[in-house]
Amino acid sequence: MVVVMQAGASEEQIQRVIDRLVSLGFDVHRSTGVKHTVLGAVGVHPEFDPRDIELLDGVREVVRITQPYKLASRAFRPEGTVVELGKNVQVGGTDVVVMAGPCAVESADQIRRIAEQVARLGAKVLRGGAFKPRTSPYTFQGLGEKGLAMLREAADRNGQLVVSEVMDPSQISMMLPYVDLFQVGARNMQNYHLLRALGTVTRPVLLKRGMSATIEELLLSAEYIMAGGNYDVILCERGIRTFENYTRNTLDIAAIPVIKKLSHLPIIADPSHGTGRRDKVAPMARAAVAAGADGLLIEVHHEPERALSDGAQSLYVEQFAQLMAELRIIAPAVGRRIA
Ligand code: PEP
Ligand code: MN
Image 1 (cartoon, rainbow, N blue to C red):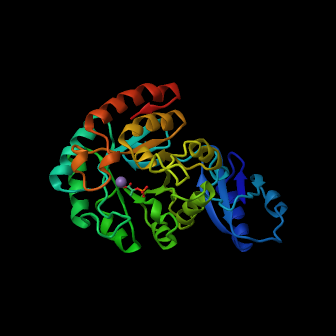
Image 2 (spheres, protein in one colour):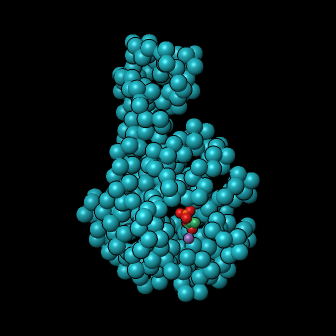
Image 3 (cartoon, helix red, strand yellow):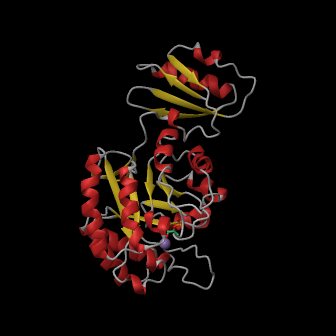
C-alpha cells in the first residue's frame, strides 16, 4: 500500500501516519518528493481498513497496490528516481549515461588503454569484470581484487566512475573502495542473500535481468535490495533466452517502456550481452535509447580478437566512436542528451 500525503503536509502529520502504520504492523519506507511525501507500507494485513489511514490529517490518498512489489512500483515515486553515481553523473535524469569497457579486466595496460579511449568518446563510467561468472569453470575467471585496483586506477586517470560485478556477499566490503556501482549479473538476479546484503550498503546497485526472468521477477529482486533501505537501484535489460539462437540472447527492447510504466527505477540496456554479436550492438543500442533507456552498458576492447572473454560482442574503439556520434543525434529526438 502507498500513502500519498497532501502537498504541504506537516512533519507532525507525516509522523502520525507513520506511527499509525507501524502500530498496525507495517514496515514503512518514506520517499520525500518535490511536492508530496509518499509512504510505502510493506506487509500483508488482510484485515486492514484503508479508511483508518485515509481519515488522518494530511493524507491525500491511500493507494492499494496489487503488484507484489511496492517500493519498486511507480506509485511509490511517481516522479521517477534519479540515481546519483558521482558528482556529475546521474542515471534517470535527462542524460543518457554510457558505461563502457571490456568484459573483463585483463591487465593494467589493457584497462588503461580502453579507459582512455572510451572516456575520450564520452563514457562516464568504466566497466570491467574482476569476478567473472563464466559458464565453464575452466575459462578465465577474472583477476579478483588486483583487477579491481587496475580498474579503479584506470578510471581515476580519466575522471571516470567504476562499475564491476559482485558475485558474493563476502566480496562487498572489499569492493567498496574500488567501485561506484555494484553490478549484479544475470546469473545472480535471484541470489537473495546477495540482494539482501546489497540492501544494507550505501552504494548504488546495477541489477541485471536474469536470462529467464520475467519483468515482475526483476522488479521483485529490486524490491529485495530496496526493502533493506538501499533505494539506489538501476535496472538493466541484457537480453533473455528465447527459441531464437541467431543472437546469443533476445534483447527485450519492449521491457524498457514497460518498466518505465511499472517502476520509478532507472533502466539501462546492455546490447552486448543482449545480442552477443559485435555487428548487432550498435543498432540495438540506438533502439534502446530511442525506446527511452536511461543509459547503456557496452563492451569495448582495443583488441577484441585477443579478449579473454566476450571478444565477439566487444566493439572496436572506432565502432564505439561511430555509435556515440549516432547516439548524440538520436537522444535529443526523444528529449534526452548524451552526457
Ligand atoms: C557482464 O556484464 O560481463 C556479464 C557477465 O553480464 P550478464 O550478467 O548480463 O551475463
Ligand atoms: Mn561480458
